[in-house]
Image (cartoon, rainbow, N blue to C red; front, top):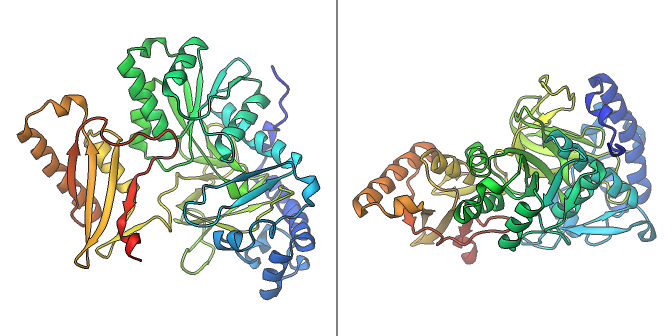
Length: 435
């Protein structure tokens, strides 16, 4: 067995001992940020807080929040807490909604990040006897780098495929007998579809998949598990706090354990900033307590979820977060109604549709239009126009029952919606073009 660097014993540490460790690391981290990050020190001073006010995790609420706007304003070096000569890597977000977020890493930061990903792989049953196929993107995107390093720490044979080139993905999967697949859930669904089309399902040796980087529903999980014959595990992370591995699912699949020795999680009311008690839904906030180069305190993720410390059958004591239940910044307001894409996906998959769909919102004559294109299966495409029309009506009714407003549903030909080899583009909001 490969040497285990990632301290699995911490995952079962008694909660009071874990909280004491968090307090010790938080106090040290606040001092580190105060002394080395003028941008955040100014925010603390504006709130009348100094490091002496932070004695432990019970004082965390005294610190100011950081948001993505802060990261953009401080770009590129304004939140750096280590000399540039001590940093060995950057990773970055896509920058699709503004300036890119650039995160910095010392070698120590990378080691701890890979430790977190190693925990995720072992929680999915991974050992040094597994073959891990990493089909997340490499480069600036954190997915490929994190799972690649985590696989090395577990001692697994690692196939650094990156995303795309589906023919080669399947060839290597068959020839090298991959046992664990790491990629986005939408690409996993596409791989499952492609494997079925090629008739090689019986040659696939996969036992587990670790999927993240985009929202996915329980219905999509079951669809992927059925197509690939695996157990599908969720993994959570964001570039701002390191990347994937901040939290991950165990075999219970009832939420993701947060690596609490590295991250403190809070749930707040997204409108008021008030810290909410365990079990209530709100916005997830993270504080990094071991990062050296880019340590964010009370970073608002915009992800909506629930935290629970209910005892887990796997023996891990670290608190669990639910799958993100939406985002406070990707919620669509259509005709005055709050709509989350995950609600639509749940209805479509419950109605037996494929996971290939696209939501299109526009504004015509000052009124919102709401269309959903849903790809048919090959069998459905062969049905009569009457049957297809009835199915569209059924979907319209089911969606209205879920959302409270009516959408126009268009069943479209198989393969007519562009497939994603990274994050799926689920929503096209044309109203943004008009300001």
